[in-house]
Amino acid sequence: MKKRKVDTKLKGSNNLYKNEFIDISKEGDEYFFEIGSLLTNDIGEAISIMMRKVDNNSEIWNLEINDIEVEKITPEKSLYWLSGGNDEWQNLENYNKPWSDCYLEFQEEFGMLIVNIIKKSKTFGDVKNKFIRMLNLHTLYDFALSKNMIR
Image 1: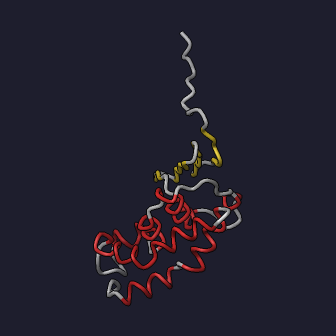
Image 2: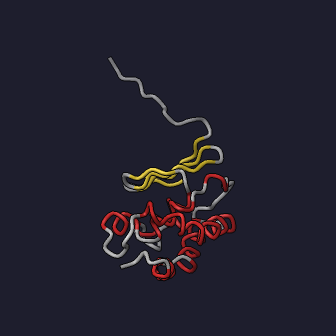
Image 3: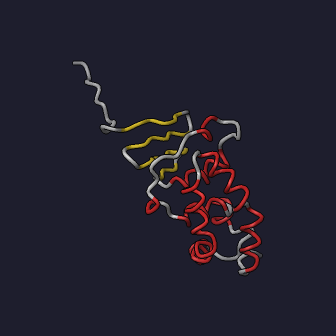
């Protein structure tokens, strides 16, 4: 007996990018990202993760951003990865407090900036470049230092 192939894609689903490590699709006005073993539908978080894992010359940075629902952006997710991600927040080599004690202060300081960067950007690369310029590790460490979060 032959197995029947089942199409699991939803109607209106659009695969935007796929390689062996990253899968990006869009269904209606919602993006879905699979980056290694990480799954998210938050474009800011996805770009923050990809900044560490994707070459600067990749065509992924040319993908256009369309129909972003601002309500689905959770700034603390982006800030987690921009401020060091799992390497920093799980090991606490530089920080002296866990992320759960710090994220509200990061969000109060930089949350609206994350949302505005995404709203005003036309491509994934625009977001990446603005994150690098305005929310680089130096900026975030200076903030953490001023709030006594750094050893």
